[in-house]
Structure formats: structure tokens, C-alpha cells
Image 1: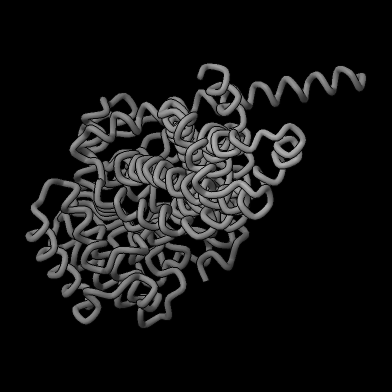
Image 2: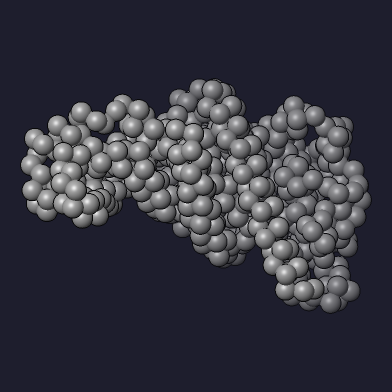
Length: 258
Length: 242
């Protein structure tokens, strides 16, 4: 086989894998949606997992958001100074944080931290026969294990996006004052006058989409685990890589639509 | 009650069960022994359709399970108690909740489920460990907890996958007595898979020897000890029946 043919074969295999993954995630998403309205849905487990996922990620997300808010202002600073556009710093930071950087950053941090953990936990349940144990007594694992985690991850990431965005905006305001001499009232006026509710809605929508992608991809990675301890590690790795890819692709798709 | 007829189960190119046939009637306690990877676990999992046969027939209580509807499969599973070799205990639930989970999922009120679970745990000698988490229990206690969970719903079909693994002879004998007692109480059919036949010889009615996915011998338990040496030599695996 020539090098070109081999390359084409690899690309084709990767595309097919991606389509299979997307299809599988959609099917699992549909099963989760059905489970969430069934009487067998474990809402207590969803609440517990939301606490674990959400509070567990709060510190790291807040720290990252604070840094990103400052970085946005530092990067914009060159042009703000050159063109004297001090009055748009608040809007520019708010727009960037709410629409683009906030949800994307929260999604990537979340998929790395929570998605990998979720995949590893489900993989461990699978390799220890816990999921087969459920099937053996006629219990569907989706409303008991998968759907509560998908709901918890979605609610957690939405909340984390809101908190992270607030932290990032405050951090941007502090950086603007320290580095560009834009005082708090000026920053706040610019932010309030030009930032729209649709910016927040777009970010929130992205967060929900990213959370669902991370949840479904990581749950699938766990559910497909075969073998022992190495399968748990492989599931976690697969969840991180595939979730990140899915999030970046969704970011592009949502940005195009909204 | 359980009729496995020429069942083959493949995982990819590998056949984990090769034309296995087994009959177990109501009231029988059957031991399934053999070396690792003989197909014991796959056979038990196939009986409750955790694995689908690629060939053969599987009839349980007159129901052809291979062609059964999802509702019929669900009804069968509600009559099965399965203790997994890997225990399959829920890490975050204490002993009572681990056992009560099965009952709650079958529609029994939480309070009644907890009471019945606690009673079952007392019967297997875990009265002092009701509120302990699985990681706080010893290996033998975990096995008894898995046993209690499999038995709490009073199953007509009890399947135990190597309940003796990792236990000392005293603990093995205790588990074997528990299995025999529960079997007599419930009056259904009990299948116990084990790598070592010794704990089963005093409690089982029959012992089936498996090797490489096939059933090689099916003997009354009282004859098995005498035949074990010859069978092992035939199989070339003397350690299997040591």
C-alpha cells in the first residue's frame, strides 16, 4: 500500500470513528432524556454528583478564570493604548468572557477534571461487574448511573460558567485599572452599556452544550471499558481527548449559528 | 428448570463457550468447576442473558430465552439472584443499602426493604456490619455481603460465581453451608461456579467439570471426588481438581 493510500485509510478510519462516536453519544443522550422523565431516575444521585462535580471544580475554575480575565485585558491593552479606546475595555472584556473564552475555558477545564473522573468511575464500575450486576437484576444503568451524571455535569458546568465569568470580569476590571488606568466606574459603564443579555445567553447555551458533550463522551468511554485497571486509565484518557475535540467543534458550530 | 442445549458464546474469534449443554432441575444444587478461563462465568452470565448465545438453545422454566421478549427477559431476571466473582458491591452504599437496593428496585418500600436487608445480613452472619461500607469489610465478609444481596429477593434461580475465591478453607466451608442452607430454604435451582471443587463436594447434588468452554463431565457430587483424578489426567490439568 502506498503512503498516500495508508494516510487516506487512517483519515477515513478517524472520520468513521468520529461519526460513530457522535452517533453513539446522540443515542446515549436520547436514552438519558427518556430516563430523566422516568420514575426510575435517581435524582438524589444527580444532586450528590452535582455537589461533587461542581464544588470540586470551583477553586480551579475560579483561579483560571481570574487569570484569563487579566490576560484578555493585557492582550487588548496594546490596541487600547494605541487607539485610545479606553471606553470600550469593559465591553471588550465582557464580550470575550461571556461569549467565547468563558464557556470554552470552563468547558475544557471541566472536561479535563470532571470528564476524566466520570469516565474512570464508570469504567471502574464496569470492570468490577457493578453495571452487569444491575442488568442481572433487571435494572437499566442509564437512569441509575448515566443520566444522573449527565444532569449533574450539565447543571454544574452552567453554574461554574456563571461564577467563572463573574470572576473573570472582576479580574479584567482590576487588570484594566492597574495596567491601562481604566478605573472601575469607567469599566463598569462600558460593560453595562454595551454588553447584552444575548451575550450571556450565548455563553450559557454553549456551556450546556459543552457539558452535555463532556458528559455523554465520558460516560460512553466508561461504559465501553473492557479489562482491568488499564481500561480505567484508557477510558479517562479517551474521555479527555474526545471531550476536548467535541467541545472545540461545538464552539465553532455554536459561534457560527449565534 | 434450566436447560442449556449446545450453547456457543463467542467474543470475536474466541469461543468462550463451545456447545455447552447442562440441565438443572428444581431443587438441584449444581457445582460447576474447572480451571481459569474454562467458561464457568460465561455459562452463568449466559443463563441470565448477560451474554447472548451465538448458537444453541437456552430454556429456563419453559421459556425460550433466546427468542424471549424484553418483558419476558425482565421477568426472568426478577427471579434470579446473581453473586458476581468481582462482588459488584456499590462502594458508596453501606451493607444494608447494598442489599436493600435490589428490593427497592423491585418496588418494595424503602423501610421494608431495609428491614428485609438487615434480616438477610443477620442470616449470613453480618449483624455487626450493617452500616459498614464495603471497603471496611474483610474479604470473607464482602463475599457474604454479595451472597446476601443475591439471596435477599428469595430468587428461584441462584447463581454464584466463585464465592470461594480468595478465602481460607474455614471461610470457604462457611460460605458453602450458607449456600446450601439458602438453597434448601428457597427450593429453586442453585448453580455455583468454583475453581476448586472441594467446598462443593459436601453440599452439591452434582458437579459439572468444564474446560476450554466445554462441559467435560457431569457427575453426582459423591462420585466426583473419586473421578476427579482421572478427569484431571484426561484434561491434562491436574491443578484444576487438586
